[in-house]
Image (cartoon, rainbow, N blue to C red; front, top):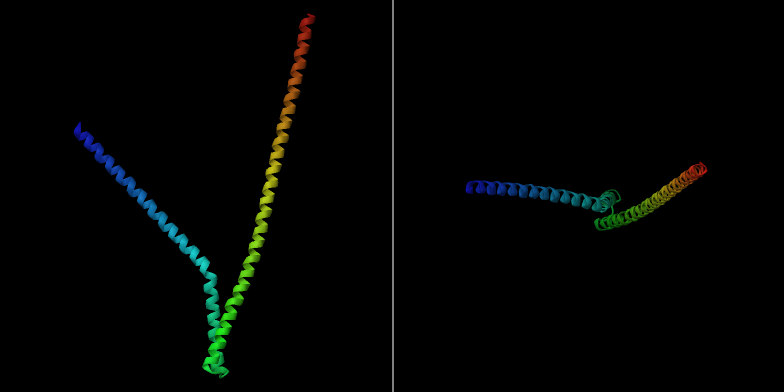
Length: 162
């Protein structure tokens, strides 16, 4: 009897350990998935800034090299002009991106409002159809009850007449 209890308790301990192991594995997978999602969101958020920086830097460096070697300006003047071009490109394209995203957001917002309005109309239409169906069923039920009562009266009259 004691051996059976010990076997049961050891089996139970093993089962609990396995459950804990499975639970820890699931939590680890969930943490890994969340970490991957966070990285993905970070890349999405930083992409526009990195893109603007790279585009502005390349244009600024190309303009600096052009100014220094081809136009034969001084190094300090070329660096200054390259920096000015970088700032103009970075902020100019940034503003253009911002305007583009705002327009896109407004368009999507209008689409979402239109979709919500259509869903509300569909819900009202379904509700109206359900009410019409209920009214029609009630009307049919009343007519059936009136016919039944009329038939019952006829039968009563016939029974009274006999």
